[in-house]
Amino acid sequence: MSIPAERDAREAPIPPPAAAGAQDRAVAAAPAAAAILSVNNIEVVYDHVILVLKGVSLQVRKGDIVALLGANGAGKSTTLKAISNLLSAERGEVTKGSIIFDGEEVHARTPSELVRRGCIQVMEGRHCFAHLTVEDNLLTGAFTRRDGHAEVRRALDLVYGYFPRLKERRGSIAGYISGGEQQMCAIGRALMSRPKMILLDEPSMGLAPQLVEEIFKIVGDLNAKEGVSFLLAEQNTHMALKYARYGYILENGRVVLDGEAKALGENQDVKEFYLGMAEGKRKSFREGKHYRRRKRWLA
Image (cartoon, rainbow, N blue to C red):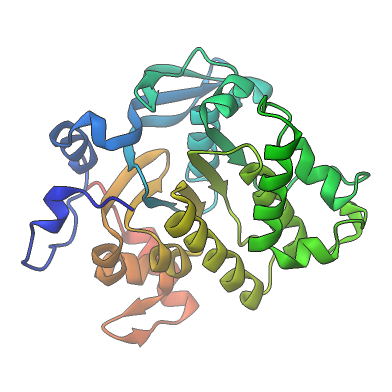
């Protein structure tokens, strides 16, 4: 995995990231060639009326895991759908800014073209084909490939190597397997397309903590061993920052904080706002609600 040179060069502790505008400065300062994905000041509107994203900018460097954090409704899923060009299915559109993947502007590309170029999204809620077997679900991920049956079979063996449980359930109907197995199936299906980058939306949703840990560990292995970059939208801040190298926090459609994952995890505002922790002590639910009401990230 490649780590940005400017991050390696810093020996001093990383200060807490600045608020508004910090992500734009970081994007401007970094060389474009180092990023596999660059989202520049995009706005997204639904139904020609509802402004959902307001000037969002972020970068994912080749070989990195980047976390996109925020509460429910902050705009995480919309950001991923804007990148993968799935907004039109929900009457949404990118009205401003640019999205560059692997050196090319992709705003006009269809989702299938993006998959062929190596960018694929794993949707929130898993979305397996419930009436197909696990193996048939995985094989649908290779639909855009044109390199022959033998290569597809090698990719299938690779998926089974990372997800041995799927190999055990390969003949089972996907609608009857567990939620954790369905999430593994969805990630495995994405891996079948030979992705350079996976947009992973809420992989921990509805899963037991042990399964969440297992899935995040596999994501880390895919990143380290296969070189797959990840943009990870997640509400589980602690788990996401444990595996990510860099993170962005969204609130009300804006990036309000960004920085190295370790720095974000140690930031007192992040701890109090998302984890209910302050000064090493766990706060009550009532205190957390009061903090959320009075906190203004962009003040």
